Length: 419
Image 1 (spheres, rainbow, N blue to C red):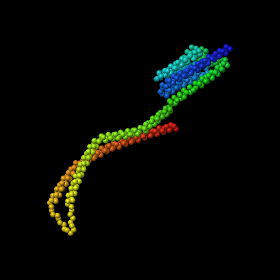
Image 2: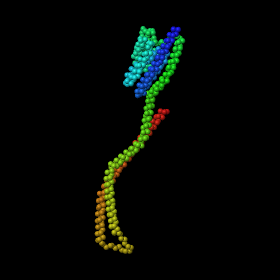
Image 3: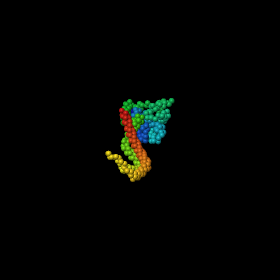
Image 4: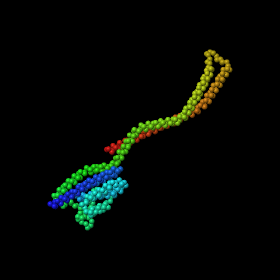
């Protein structure tokens, strides 16, 4: 029958429109995802990468949702609205950013997709309806300049938000708003309508299920970027970085500490040797003076020893005479030679004593000064060596203590985090 043939032709035409919208949705989601991924690879902060990932997810999810809608005509109009508003957001927000030149390839992709989206309504809208649709879209954008995520704005809600039909206009076939609530299966034969609706329902379900894994992958990737920008995650990463730095510093300290101690010991020994070399001349001169002083003292001691021997000989020459028992004491007759010899030996002894005294008077100050200089120089050297050694030991103890305290604090904090 002619009526059945006309109904079948309308059903085929609606099916072709639905297939065109589905194919365009695939192309739209793929091109947006590719361009946004390239832009995302140039970003350096997690916040920028999260924004690009959210844009990809919303654009792809909205395109697949529109393509799997029950009304092929409304789907085509929704796709036009999605492409046009997305291009406006790209030009108003992304292209006018501080580094908007990086987003220019993404903007160009959206411009091309917008041109292709308007081709979907060729044959569905007249020229006046297309012009009216553009006016409605521009008016909505003027009223909502701060809306950046436009992926979920559909034609029905979109047209109603700007006031619907103008005053004096009705929902006639020539008016754009006559497309609202239009059922493309109204004029079909009931049997053909049921078959077409069932077939499209199955096609839409299969279509969306086939694209679900890709959407799930993008959602998981978006979740990772969202976790990266959370304050708790940033704090945890910063704590892990600090723990890693402390651990590496402790390892480096434990590996370099023997070398540090060896270098400090060598530096101390070298400095001590330098000090010894610096005072070598003064110590040598003091040693020579001490040597000459000791030699003079030796000579003085020898002279004193000779003097004592002379006195001993003098006293031995005149031993005391003990009187015998029963014998009357009789005085020895006077002999002038004995006294003369004694006076001569006393004169020699006196001269030796005078010489010894003069030698002692000239030698004792030099011995005293040389002894004091040598003792002072040796005391300064030993004091400097002692304090430098004590400073080295204290520095090593402080370094080891700080490293142990830092390691203990890190371990305690990580244990608390784990609990």
